[in-house]
Picture 1: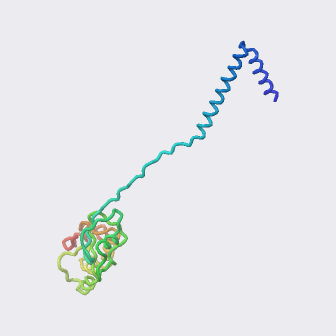
Picture 2: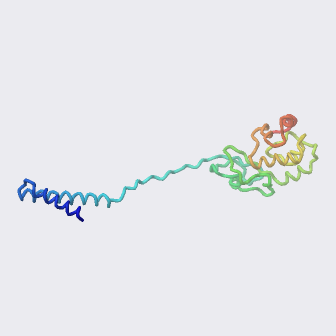
Length: 202
């Protein structure tokens, strides 16, 4: 409290010691009051003004289009345009769904398809007729992407266990692109591939 009183006395002494006329002192007071009022309004208006919100335009991501060839036991075989994240089941539905007698057990329906891929749907009758053929009877090279377990088992050095591994590989990774890809299947090395490479195709 004493400090405030001392400060007030100092200002009063300074004011009375000014070598101004009473009119000049009143003018100085008016100018000072106006500056304080203007400064107050500028501060209040600056705080009250809402910040400008920058409007960002929405980003439109164009979905990738791919083409897939659907063949075999489907109602409308052909090449279909699908979105980039489509799965095998979407491609089969685009081809009019599977035909009566189709066997979908050898296909991974949840796998994401790639551009230019062919999806072949086998028919159950093909499996039944092929299972009735003797193991040592083959006509032409065995197609790695369409062969049944029995047909793969008929290859020299390929037993039922490795035949099932080939089918499982197709389900997870999609069709074989080259016959050399069969070496990615566990149990098929360089020697076994050399033994069967003339009897397989994709």
